[in-house]
Image 1 (cartoon, rainbow, N blue to C red):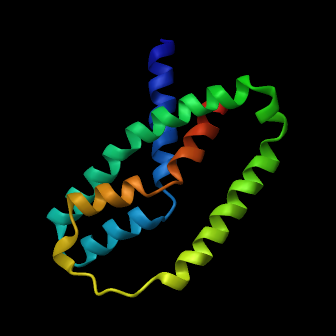
Image 2 (image 1 turned 180 degrees about the vertical axis):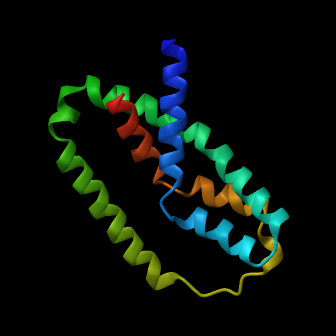
Image 3 (image 1 turned 90 degrees about the vertical axis):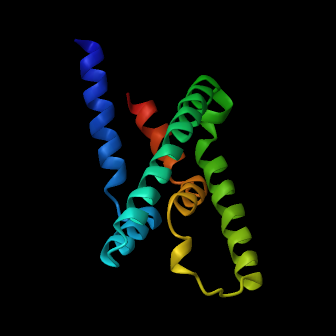
Length: 133
């Protein structure tokens, strides 16, 4: 019975994690509105496949975080430092970025896979869910 309860909880939490409108969800919505249903399905399947390794990584990092007192005590400082570094890197990359015209035919499985891999929001979500459970 506990296995069934764990499965239902994991399914519900996974569903809740996909609800917020992020880059991936809006890309699938855009493809659907443009009547490119095959590309939308391919994109969503590829992005979903990336969730499995992200979940595995998050579970292992959660174990590391909760078992190491130094990390747990300084978690806010570490998080703020990481966000500051990512913000600075993002500002630097904005200067070098050139606007390129995107070909609509490039959407599909490969694009979904790449955007899924580059979507870093899944790891903190799964770390939080694993710590909660």
